[in-house]
Amino acid sequence: MLAVLWLLQEHAAGAEEGFASPFEVNFGLFFWTWVVFAILLVALWKLAWPGILKATQDREARIKAQLGEAEKLNADAKAALAEGQKMQADARAQAQSLLAEAKAAVEKERAGAVDKIRHEQEAVVERARRDIAAERDKAISELRREAVDLALGAAAKVIGQRLDTEADKKIVLDYLAKVETH
Image (tube, rainbow, N blue to C red; front, side):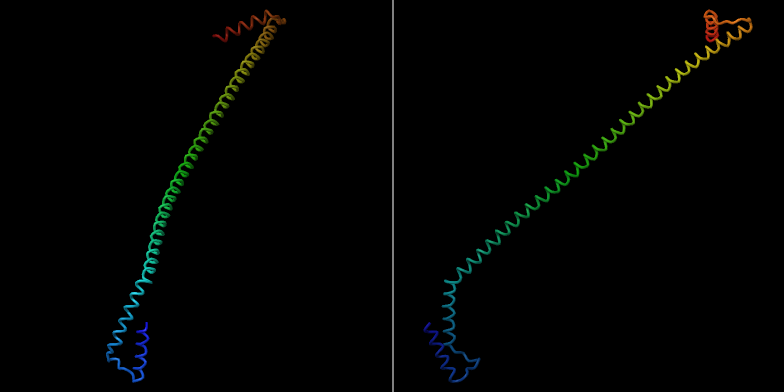
């Protein structure tokens, strides 16, 4: 340090003599500049360089750790996205199967209703046929009775007396039965 002060004093003394030309070489100044540069270089090398190097290495390690964490988070995000897409596809498939089941249930219910209505219609038709047959038999029976009464009335007029006994009715009914079978 003393040398630096001495150099400054010499420079001040030289400045009093006049300004030096920029093309003039002062070997003393040149020598002491290199000495000061070497001292500063060694001091920085010993004192500042390890701190700078450590800070740079720490920063590099932090960046590597952050990159590793970012890659891990990216992989997790991709896995979550794939899982979400799989869950969406599963939900879509489940919804389609529920829709198909509902359609099948509706079709089954419709077929059951159609069968029930068909059976009810057949029952109504059968009941109507029985009612018609019963009415027909009743009408035929009524016609026979009327025919018997008319035949007896006509025979009574022809004979001139009244025929109303059960034996007379039986004769007419037997005759009508023979006519129906022929």
